[in-house]
Amino acid sequence: MPPRRNPTRRQRRFGVELRKIRESAGLNAQQLSRALGIDPTQVSQMESGKVGVSPERVRSLAAACKCLNDPLVDALADMAQERSKGWWEEYRGSIPDGFLENAELEKHSIELLIWVTTHIPGPCQILRYTLEVFGRLIPALPRHEIDARTAFRAQRRNDLRRDRKPITAFIYESALLTRFGGDRVLKEQLEALLEDSELPWMTIRVVPFATETFPGAVENLTYAVGPVPALDTVELESSRGSILFDAVSELEAYRAIFNRTERAALGEKESRDLIHKTAREL
Image (cartoon, rainbow, N blue to C red; front, top):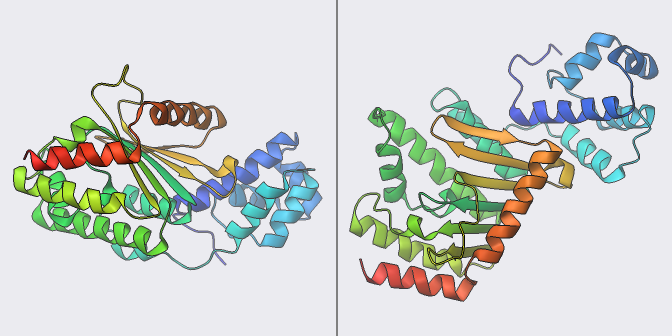
């Protein structure tokens, strides 16, 4: 099978983890290729995500590198078995690739932690609210692009709900007041958010203005929990698109940010009371 021309972000991450295992053993690509009985170029293609790897090859590689992290090896072997394309592939070419990578990241996570300061979290957005969020970009997007992004976000939302993906969303109080689409749209959005807060797999907590100090990052964040900590990923939302982090030091820093945010946030009942009060006053 010819090498992949454009491996997905998940396929590249899989290759990066194989490279980390090799490097932690102090082996170069030539040495590993000899241990596995393969061509050195194949090692390079594996580590760049350009070729598929069987679960058996993953375990052989781990054994050659004397990797004793069994949970990580098992998780990588599971990743190696993934062959089917995700629903997001039907949007390729009509919206930026970063959107597709976010959906892929969410699908394969076991839990999502979200921190937002500017708008209601994507998994909780109603259609009209989403249209207004994408409609305020400068320069303005063509209508067909707004519609494509809105439809894609709606499908991401539905996919997470179908999977009952555990989600904890920390929302800075300012996001409850920002009027994307005006008072009526915001009121509908807050009422929908209240309904979401009652779902058994969804936790909504508000960080109020009155908190002692600003607890989180300035940017909107998503912490995607992987099957093992080494496969966690952080998505940072910026005006130029998403930035993804998976280095050990970065993951530790963002875990600390979310721990601090959790301590500053209102409880679930108090958060519902504040959301209800804000909606009532619109």
